[in-house]
Each structure stands twice: as C-alpha cells, then as structure tokens.
Image 1 (cartoon, rainbow, N blue to C red):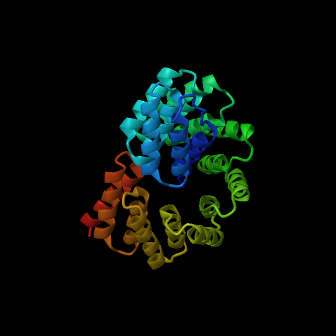
Image 2 (tube, rainbow, N blue to C red):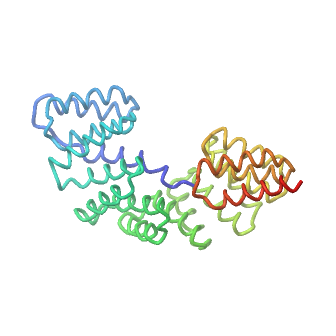
Image 3 (cartoon, rainbow, N blue to C red):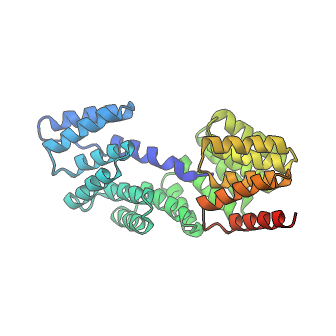
Length: 316
C-alpha cells in the first residue's frame, strides 16, 4: 500500500483554502479568489491563468507566489512551481507552508535531502504544524526510516486526532514492523474516520494475509476493488492471496490487471513472475523477473528471483 498517494491533494486543498491572503492591491484579490474557485472546481488551466495574472499584478507577495506554485505543481510545471516557492520563501522567510510545499515538490523530484531540510525548517518555524510532520513522515517512510516515520505519524495524530491519512500511514509502518494488531487498529480507525476508503481495506487485507487469514484478506481486497476499481495495489495484493489459496489462474488474472493499471509496477511483475514459475512458464517468469529488476534495480529479492529462474532454465 502506498500511503503517500494521499499526500498531494491534501496539501493543495489545505493551503488554497486556509492560507489565502487578503490582497491590498486592487484587482489582485479578484484574481486570487477566482483562481482558487477554478482550482477547486478542477479547472487548472483557468486557475493558473488567474494566478499568473495575480503574480503579474503583485510579484512581491509571498502568498500569491505560493498559490501560483501550487497550481503549477498540479499542471506538471515543476520548474515553474519551484521558482515560485523559492521566491515566496525569499520574500517571507518565516512562511511555514511554503517550506512544506517546496519540500513536497523536492520529494517528488527525488531530492530527499532538500525535502528533509525544508520539512525540518517548517517544523522549526511552527512545531504545531501537523502538515509538516505528516510530510516528513512520508519522506522517512520512502527512505525506509520506519522508526522516524512512526514518530512523525504519532506526532500528527497527537496534534490532530482525526487525521485519517496519518492512521493509514502509521498502520502501514506498524505492519512493516511486524505489529499486526497495532496495524489493524490503525487501519480500522482510518476506515472509521473515512468510511469507504479503499486504502484502509487494502491495509487490513494485507495484515490478514500476513497472519494467514486468507479468507478475510480476500474479502477485504474484494471490498477495496469494489470501492476503487482502478487500484493496482488492490489487484496485486488480491493476486498474492489467490496464489496462496492455490487459485493460480485467478492470481495471474489479478497480476495482469495490476500491470494493466500501472505498467511500471515492479512488485506486480515480481508477483506475476512467481505465478508463472509455479505454472511452468519459466520463460514468461524470467521476462517478468527481469522487468521487475529493471524497474527496481536495487531490490535484492527481485534479483534473487531472476537468478533462480535463470538457473532453473539452464538445468532443464
């Protein structure tokens, strides 16, 4: 499960809703207001046009720069967004939200060191900013610093006890740390806070699968797919459960679907490789294992699986 997928929309909506300033210069506030409304309605082209006009009218306002940067991120103009976030921080060095947003952008660009520095600065400026702790927790999770991520998610929940994404993230950390009961409790709390969230069912299904409750896991993955039919994670994990139940044809179909939905999903190729290997399709299994390694070259499990299949083919 990818808990960080909840991250982008959460911060965009939050900042555009809560950190929207009142502008003194005539006309600027109108463009900001209309830009926000268009952004929230999903009209990114119109929102960006209005926000760029607001920047043109008042280029030295940090909040205007920050708002324009958010819209640029959503449009995929990461270089333009970074320029605006940099300028916002230059104009107002104590603007916590700008550091958090810039950190998020740097994380997306693979600059983990820069992202961590921005999150740390945001927390230094405002130790009560649960958004900054949440963002840093996502980063630490990505870096496999599970204890650090857990500490940040704990802090988020302490600051805002009804933050559903934090329970999802903490549940995943606890699952990875072999705390199945703690993970189940967090995933169930997430489901209570946001009924109908497919990720919560993926989480409980993963825990049940690890505990050997394959019927319970299958039921949860089925529910996740019902709620979110385009979830590659749900299909991939259901495929694993079906394989463990001996339902190899169904498992193969699920892994195929996961790859169809997410063509660069290394874990799905790895799982499909295993299914094909069990079914005797060693050439297909090798092709999938090699694809998994190509997508994630540092994963030793993928490398070991590829090498084992190559050996098996050589010994035929």
